[in-house]
Amino acid sequence: MMDEALGTDIRIEDGDFVTNPTGDIQLVTGKACVAQDIKHKLMSSADALFLHPGWGADLVRFIHAANDPLNRLDLQQAVQEALERDPRVEAGTAAAEVLSWERDHISIRATCRIIGETNPLNLVIDLSGGEIRIEVI
Image 1 (cartoon, helix red, strand yellow):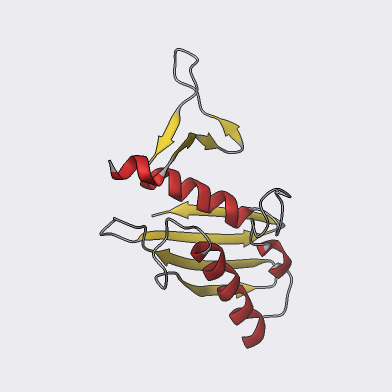
Image 2: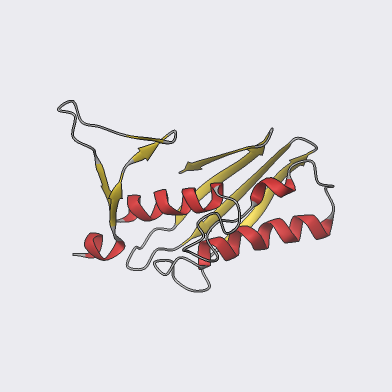
């Protein structure tokens, strides 16, 4: 029942639909659906979907930015706010920490708790060369 409340969507990997051997499109449900949606939100530029104001996190703007306390705080807040904007994430549970910051590579650990789940959703976000890669652990 909780899986239905968390949503169902088309499974997307590397920007493409995933199909079964029969050719049917695979679906993703529950916590995996939330994780996929959050990954797409973090990988999108701010307001990327004009019908959904506030969608996206615009994290690429931090690549090549100076590694200073203000930029670190701004990045952490951008990740936390993107996580908290998802109504399936428990309010006040989102956190982000910059693990490393080089001129052309930034690594962030983020976590949040999905409503109805006991274990948190843990993400590692890598910003490098204009690309964003996100791994759910």
